[in-house]
Length: 196
Image 1 (cartoon, rainbow, N blue to C red):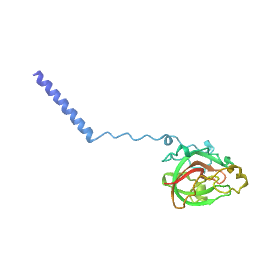
Image 2 (image 1 turned 90 degrees about the vertical axis):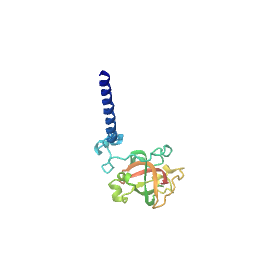
Image 3 (image 1 turned 135 degrees about the vertical axis):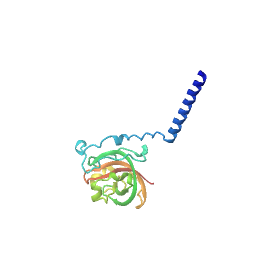
Image 4 (image 1 turned 60 degrees about the horizontal axis):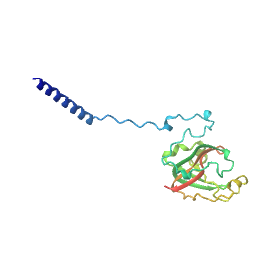
């Protein structure tokens, strides 16, 4: 009788475990949702607290493809009057389609890039009102300098960024800045540009 009671209890335990196991397989516990990235968790600084112009975007997205370390350099290198540029991110890689190219007297040329949706929040009101809503990319010291205060910054510098083709999609790496003179956002200097 005692043996029989033990067998009944053991059988009950086995049946209970297997039914709990099959219920778990039918209704698996939901996996944990990924936690917010450090960038998402931090509140964006207010313009008054950070000293940044209200026309600057509140935050910059994490690049989908982090820039190659070799592409990132000193964001003031060969930039004339670098204090006019408020540095937001020392090195950022973005992507989009080139819409317009202009040569400038300071030896740079302006590339207007229509950003991919993932980077659309990198433009501000200055870009929207003055630059067709595009981000301005500026490779420095690429052409002959005729602006007097920019000549020394480009002394001995050889062009290093290929001139892009309008209508082509590119990946671009540079320092993300607010041009405080013009009020728009730029990658300036632009260090790397290649078809993507």
